[in-house]
Image (cartoon, rainbow, N blue to C red; front, top):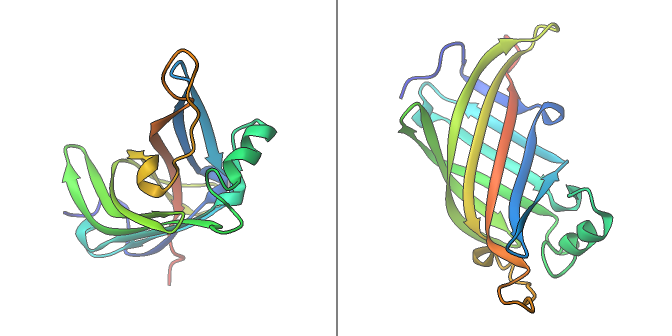
Length: 183
């Protein structure tokens, strides 16, 4: 697969201030709760083709924010992320494959020390040069995981039936990468 127009080889770095790594999970079977991680690093190592390229990412679990202090404390605790014992979530890509107008980024996601292969359906949003001369590339992505696959098994049974927190978690990515400086 050829590289998109204006994407150059080299190591592109995540612009965390213009990116969002978040997820959505159904709560009590009737609503969706969203959360984001505010501290992450990632690199996009662009090879001669997309299939030669690689993505690595590290997310600090203590940076989780859902907008509710009590919920955040519970999610950061032992019932879910256990940030003291597991301070990071990581992703390392294995390969990229074409998928219509986008591509699937396949790699190893590690949460709470458990690694599973995931496929992230992605969309390339283009390249732009900002007013400061930085070349940026944008990528959107989404995948759905089972939280139980990663040892995130805490739950509560509801009086009317069902459970408090869905097993299905949708991970949403809106990422901006900055190109390597010209040599």
